[in-house]
Image (cartoon, rainbow, N blue to C red; front, side):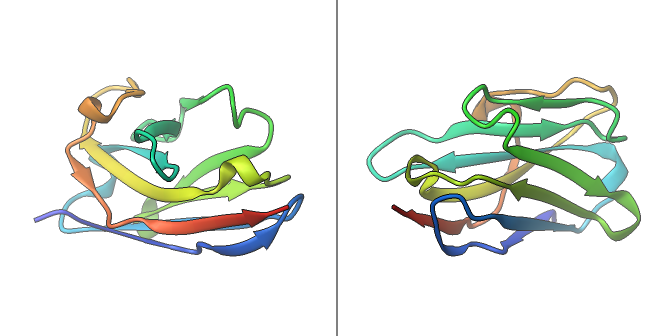
Length: 126
């Protein structure tokens, strides 16, 4: 059974940085496309970034492009989200997600992912 565990959230001030981590256990990491989503209070869950199974393709939401960077270490079954220049509007519960994939396709909706972590809270104060 696949299990995703996020870590690295916290409270920071505007302009500061955080790095989120996601560990996948239970299956072969290199067969999974991975993604990050977030859910601000009172809003729907939204796509932030995704990375293909071999790391060769990355996709970002316009709202974070140039500030956030997604990466993965297949040997450690880990995925990361480096978040720089954080803004108050980045405040949300951040989730990692995974789906089995045999290609470099990276989905950008919640329906594209089958497995989800419990989330880690990121709060950015002004």
